[in-house]
Length: 440
Image (cartoon, rainbow, N blue to C red; front, side):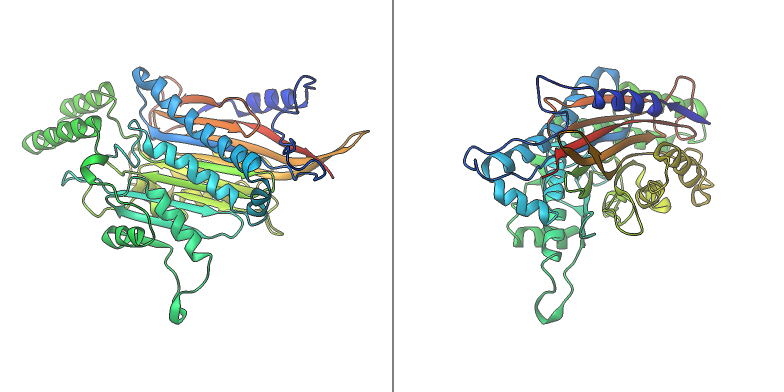
């Protein structure tokens, strides 16, 4: 059964609005200002587009404002990142764009904002495991170099994505002494020690837990103790437990993530998670696994589109289907909306790898970009046509998106249509954005 599908309507309206003249301001989604200190220098246009999510799971109406706010802040942080490089260090920004690094830095900045929010299950305020400790997973991928960095079950780090990003950047430097291959994925104590050795300060675990995460842990622990005493097959008890979780807003708000494309066409993706509540110590979810948590790949001879994907939901379901990479591959099809819909239905909900699962829970955000040139009487306009989508089988998913030229981000909590069953149907929405600049 397929749920809500409003992509075509959103896409048409955004395409129309993108073509409307804007006489009182620069073209939407453009980045064509000149720095004051370089009057004779024609600046290279920089900018980009970001799409973030605050998890696929259950988002209570009472906390909708907080979830939207954190997505908005994450988008604005990326926009400020682009503006900062442009206004303060313009030439360095161009060098970074040429190296394909700016998209990676922007996506990491968005994740830091999401990790720092007490309302998300990533970094600060993450779910506690069975032992009452916080262990986080995170990964990041650069679409230009195809390098990837990840950490799993890491404790005592306020922003796990920064450790993953440092692993990526260190790997790009080449081999270590004696010809050793640099690591791209570290876990547990080894990841923690490596981070400290590379100048990333630790954060005491007790400071990472919030009042909300601690109360959720105590509540979940009591439920587990009660469940062990009761007949677990009793349907009414099961329904009461699920209802209580939803009413308290403690449903699994798993991974957070972001995808970014810049005006050079470079893409990057990142993902971060505190994992499932009451998970076994040492468990590593999809947020750290290659091809499962995130994926980014620039256009090449074989692939006409640059694609970036970030996933969320039940890690075990996402790992067994490698959903991030599957979605990226599907985005090379002509119809992005139809391709994502079929992938979520055939490669996820109806996947043979999950045949014994009653409910398949997960969500994705994806974007794809392709270069386009529009010839006008006075000049030619070049840029990137960006199509962005989100889809989920969970009750809801909170997203936000923004271009570097927008004054504020748009946020939305997508929900399954009324009467549908989570894990057995899906919702899919999205739109388009044009990033433009004059051809020199």
